[in-house]
Image (cartoon, rainbow, N blue to C red):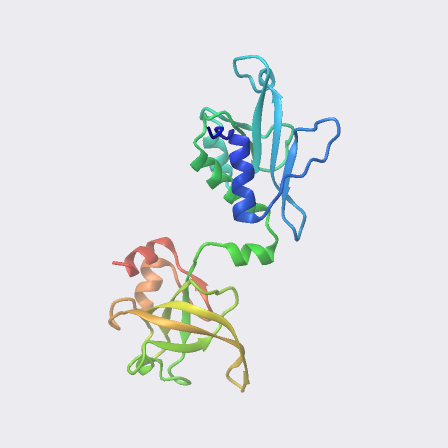
Length: 252
């Protein structure tokens, strides 16, 4: 008969499978304390400890397994510690660390999600860019230098100058400058970091990305005046993020 895994063992299995992390035991005095850390910057993203239940202010005798993780949202931290199974970070007073009780009080699905948040929060800048969720961008196009209005007439995928921070899986909304002055296309980014060297007095490029057409907009739908008055966008000089309210409108 298969033995039922403890929550601690399930955590070990999850970080091993998803992040390739093995538990490290650093303290001879506390042989059951284990940490998980990033390979590149060596920062910890999880600490498992067994502590006296009385130290946590919970009923019962003996010790309880807890997992410490670091969050990036103070509001989320404040909300969680008001719920059963969550505590302010045990023995960690700096940053948004919380302790999660590993006795089944907190569902494993929630624990996995919080481990993922902690992994992203403590990752290096390079790794954060690589593992971040897909992002939406407004990307400018000048029709004086490229006939973007007819770029998708014969094919659905074209090469475009890669903007800093954009990666495959992101969405770009192409803003066509004057005399159009409006968002005309929604595109998905299918490939990035394509080597390409070009420079003139108007433009310089070191890499291209491939973008695939997903949707067309009428020229009078998302004009510059509407972007300015309704969504607070007063200039589109380079790739920029999309406000939530505009994102919702563009998806209708």
